[in-house]
Length: 189
Image (cartoon, rainbow, N blue to C red; front, side):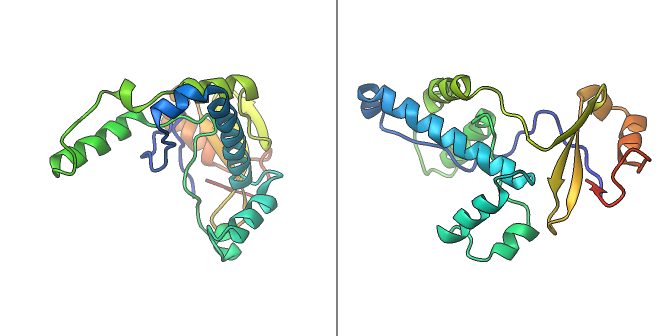
């Protein structure tokens, strides 16, 4: 199986952190510390999903917390997406808000800057530094190749192509084709 992964994935936002704005104004240090801890957990989750060193610990925590009691499913199926940089898809948030308004579930619609405050996650990102998958295999002009895990728990290479390479059919074909420098037991997705 082969798939080109967009360098800027934009999944539908399905989870956000909400807080009372008056409380946040009174407790900014507490909120910054919470966001930093939360983002560190999100990054552990991302490392685990892609076969990193945190995988077994995260699966154990998911099972023990009751998030998913069947560990075999966590090895078999994809996990919900999370941004390792803590970003939310603002367009998705506005689209969801518009749906609520169209269906008369809310009377008010707010601008993006009132819905999303990125200052706390920006602080967390600055404190933690840039996110890098620990299972990065190699990098070329066409993109970066990571070690990942497919839905059946098998090791796979995940190619994140540059925009130019993603738009070039020949580059996509070269990335998908097995070669002498590629691990023969791994599938390309």
